[in-house]
Image (tube, rainbow, N blue to C red; front, side, top):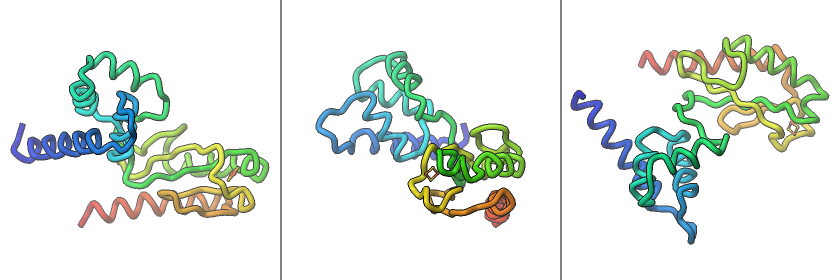
Length: 169
Ligand code: FES
């Protein structure tokens, strides 16, 4: 391990420990610790499983069994930008399926996934809470309503370009 990757690993563990130990709820459990890590890092790295087991004085297997039970936990880092596409009832009626297909084609993914270059994570939503503006998508929780397949695909493409240009700086 190089010094830089060692520093990165140390910082990751510090962030995990801080997330676990700074929980505000009265009952600290394996689940609440995992939620705290996911809130902080937006995913559960292997190191978090070890740290939660250590903090909770339980086994790594026990922590894994809790983490793998809940589908909301993700175990890989998200993309730099998250794009939510709503396919709830209102959006569905107003064309969400075509919007979703256009976005997936633009990003080169076939389901909820992170693009190969790690720039964009596509997620499905059952309602983004802006049904009057359906169909709705959201970039890092900033909503955009009344999208068309074309406008949604254009936006998705621009997100990849933003990430590409930020990499070259
Ligand atoms: S159903 Fe899409 S925002 Fe509510």
